[in-house]
Length: 64
View 1 (cartoon, rainbow, N blue to C red):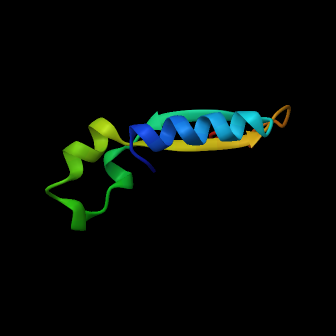
View 2 (cartoon, helix red, strand yellow):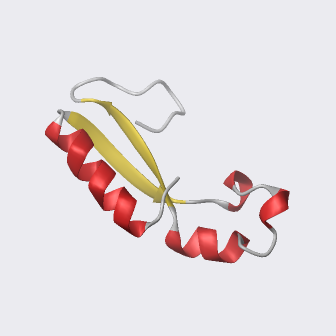
């Protein structure tokens, strides 16, 4: 999970290393109860970054 600036940086780095990259908004389930006040902010601004080696196929039901 990361904020907008770091997400773009991470995507560039992983793609340069030959990885496929997928970013998705943070879901409510990913934000713990201890973050009650910041939950909405995290869901609107933060993303989860998923990576996999180019050409590899994901396991059923998994993000890249």
